[in-house]
Image 1 (spheres, helix red, strand yellow):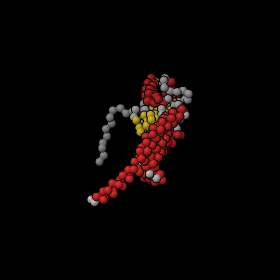
Image 2 (image 1 turned 90 degrees about the horizontal axis):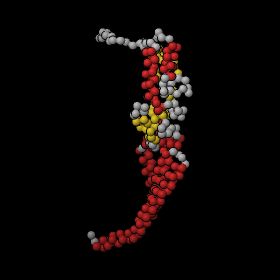
Image 3 (image 1 turned 90 degrees about the vertical axis):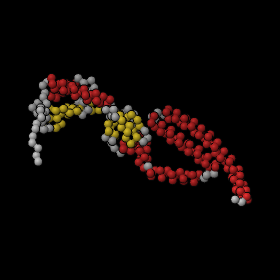
Image 4 (image 1 turned 45 degrees about the vertical axis):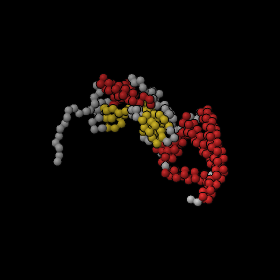
Length: 274
């Protein structure tokens, strides 16, 4: 390489360093100081949101969003000091957001649904709900999903987009739910008598709430028996405890009152066709 070219490029590099080094140093200082200020502002904002009693879920999401915006502003200022035009930076950022949004439509849909849930509050942590045809207690509400704990201790993670696209049933607003139990009665039995026996059995349960009378009625007629519907009210926390106890009490009551059930004894054999 020609010595004159080396001197030329070296001179250009020195000129570039002379011009841009102070800018880089100033931008670095702006970033360090700016991030510290953004962190302190974020802490102050979080304290204010907590005092506003907006809820843990909403305050956490808002604080995270505000902190992100503040840090992006600091980065924009540092970039402008270096010489990057803000209009170009904003355009590049907008194009990136659009491309990411198109690639992650479902992801962004869950995000929007999460904001809807956090602000409208159709349910909160600890509520018993039915979401996307799934029943359970709300254990956690995140910006992208809601997790439920079912009565049989399964954890369901449901995307928020599916939650807001379906009917939300909140059982904890009223403080009780109605059990849907079924038992069988022989055709030969008197329904008023059986109903009284069942009602007396329900009186022995420790879980039934008697602010409303339980419903006991004929649901349908089966091949061998009449199917009875029993609908007592309980607190959602005792769903399985109440179910098992009530079935046990009714069985004991049927036995004590000689109420028979239709069932087949033994094994019936028959020919198999061609």
